[in-house]
Length: 285
Length: 339
Ligand SMILES: Nc1ncnc2c1ncn2[C@@H]1O[C@H](COP(=O)(O)OP(=O)(O)OP(=O)(O)O)[C@@H](O)[C@H]1O
Ligand SMILES: [Mg+2]
Image (cartoon, rainbow over the protein chains, first blue to last red):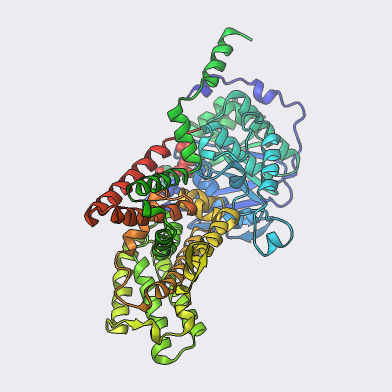
């Protein structure tokens, strides 16, 4: 775990203006008591989560802690066995990813969910294709391929990735990092309420990671709510407003990156101490 | 610029080998290989017997290809979704016998009998689709089962007897009408099949439905997460295929001048052969309809060309078999191409 060897405090100290997020109102997305089992394997054993507009909520936890299962339950990729989900305070039950998308929730799944054989533009617009104007589009349902390529190019450029040039290129011809960039560009371009990213920088270089983190901040500044799953603690401490710690299928509490250090986060993540115990240590000191 | 970046640059700019370039080109345009094979076959068969290239023989070749080429459209759609349809011929024959019998014995008008056939085709395709999507059974097993069921239903319904074209309404025989185009003779059935290729080819390459077919075939889970309803796409593919098989049956009535429950016994393998030789991957998500048309023409030109060259029928089978294996091996090789 190399990222743990650099527990710089600078990360959270750098935040000059701690942003004020209104958490008195209704959360954009709220989950209560989410349970998800796979046969005898328990993925989620009752997890609560609150997400407010204009904030970045990071989710950290060891491998198999249930991070991906949690966000899949939030985005319609999985249907939880139990628990409730509220969007702007209204109960919702997403049966498929399409339902969540239509509610303005975009997701970069850990598997990326891109189609290798199709080109970048087609992937970006899959299941929300743009048709040609006039009878060609309405009667003959012809796709506006040029238009989609142009808009795909804008989306990829906004991410700041320069190595992807041709939007007509099949995704299978891209490198792992470039594919990840395509998936992030898609979520950033279409998310209108919530953007969820499951390890979006796992395959990215330093520069590209920075661009994705920049995109996350841009989305947050535009008033969207962002969930970021990452194993990279410096990244988490750099952009997160709050940190949900997931452990053994349960929520182990929410950390404040301005109050807690990375090593403390790891302590909670691995179960060496609870958040309350951290607070106790502080009080004693 | 440092020396290091220069060497890295040199590696990037290193010219690709001709073999790599070939692999990439074939990967991007899967119809090229069957086109090359077809041209080669034409050259060789014309050299073996100059009659091969004559308009009369070519007209015959095209008419002979029409029915299998039509069936292969439906087969292509299903193989693109990483499925396979063994009930191709059985559905076509069921649709054909129901519409022929309804016209000949129950006095249905031509249009009504034709419509009935299309509905039977759609219904049979729907049954396949429902079994594949609702029960999540592998298409191979589903269509193996419905192959027997549809064949049995046809034989029970017709008691195994054929119906001559002479007792059928004109509309059902219409696909056999021919007209001259220069020195060639083209039938209505051939035009109909070409129309099907144009229409389905357009839907595959220019509409959202087509992109969803490729997406579901290439990576069903990624397609689902991207918001594509795999179930709906699969269902639509099986229904469309069923309708296409019924149209192929209509073309067959015109071509054979009769509706016979024993026809098309080798349609399954013939249609799969055409699709595979046409460069469509059995793993789904890759292939073109034009490749299938070329594949169907290749098989038929082998039949005719080797026949004209007085090569034994068994050698023709041998050649087509080798071609299938070659096509699948080529597909595997081409799929390894990256960037
Ligand atoms: N589709 C599935 N079928 C069976 N078990 C599953 C499935 N998905 C997740 N699990 C199980 O649920 C638990 C949580 O998995 P999950 O993928 O949510 O972990 P994670 O926190 O995302 O881990 P990682 O950091 O490795 O991505 C694991 O024990 C895993 O084996
Ligand atoms: Mg995960």
